[in-house]
Image 1: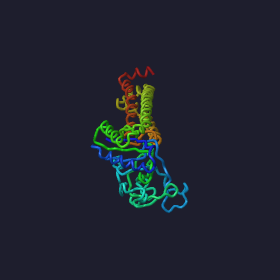
Image 2: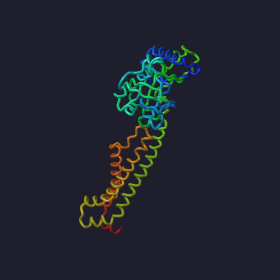
Image 3: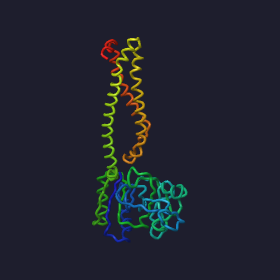
Image 4: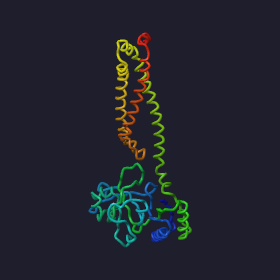
Length: 345
């Protein structure tokens, strides 16, 4: 179970903020059932957080056209990577020795490492600059994540030690094997034991992420309803088209039967033309669907409209429905005397 605890530390001066944050981390880590705890000034996919231009270490003029990347930036404590369930790909995590008296260090994600340094391996020990020349050394590389929206493309991100770059915003991420109710009460008791005036808000990780997924869920439901209506219209149109096509050829089918054509041959003649029309329509629909995949990927989280199983299933379903719609009137025509068919026409 992972919970996030939002704290507002506006009453603390700059030098006292990291001291209080360290005390909270130590106190929460001692709560029975807590397996990992870490601090961040902002959580990914929540409101807040910012981005900064990143420059190579030998850059002199800090202009936008000289930047190596535009990266999201966060301030973390030791333990946050483990609490968030993020993998460390290379190097080391932040430690409490990365304080204001030590050289400035940073974790970066894989996208940052590849874009600025060329590879994950080259990033370890590498230096970069940001914020008009402030430098930092990369000590670790973590896996990529989602930072603003769940549908965004992978983007670079950098993570600094909370002791080297202070921020009054505090999110404590706590990983525990206790129930949400138990760990919430324990967190409130522990934090208020340190400072009873601190306002806190405890939320389950899934609950916090649900707000980030709200837009995608609404879009999924809306597209699902529209897709269902579209499918109903398509099925009705296919049935109508196929039935009409066969009904207009009843005299031809009667003549074929009168001349001694076998039932299989007549049925094949009845289904041949609708099959061609359906095949062409399915091909055009598949092409348009593939062209719409990029738009869908921005709207629906983890949409995979290029999945061959999905595309093949849709095309096969429409073909089967169309052939059934043509087969039903053709079967009825085969059961009628050919002379009656020709006389009715």
